[in-house]
Image (cartoon, rainbow, N blue to C red; front, side, top):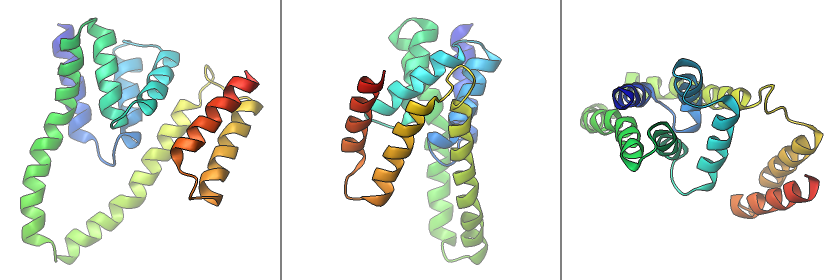
Length: 175
């Protein structure tokens, strides 16, 4: 039964996912934490952190991790990951054909221009969802966050890897 729930949940997430992993984190959190209670909010925040540090898309990494946590085996990881990716594979095959046929259509172009700001909103919502009472950001975390943001925006040549390393060093020093 857990395998069916896992498959259906991640199939649903994959079907309605638009805008990448960060944009669908709130959907993953809703399914894994609130609907099925597979993990707690704190565990979900840890899963997001681990998913960000490992190579690959955050949504796939979190699906793999939660699939393993829920079932206790690799098959659960593979099932959740496959269910998350399946709708995208099918939809992208259809969309590519339609887009190539209608790529110069002004309505298609207008629709994509309208979707872009919605994706930014979804990413912002995911960030706000991670800032909850259990994971309250104290002043030290806020300093690390703002410092990293400032470093990346002000000195764009720095890159995310040195910024992550610096944030880890600061986190170790502060905590």
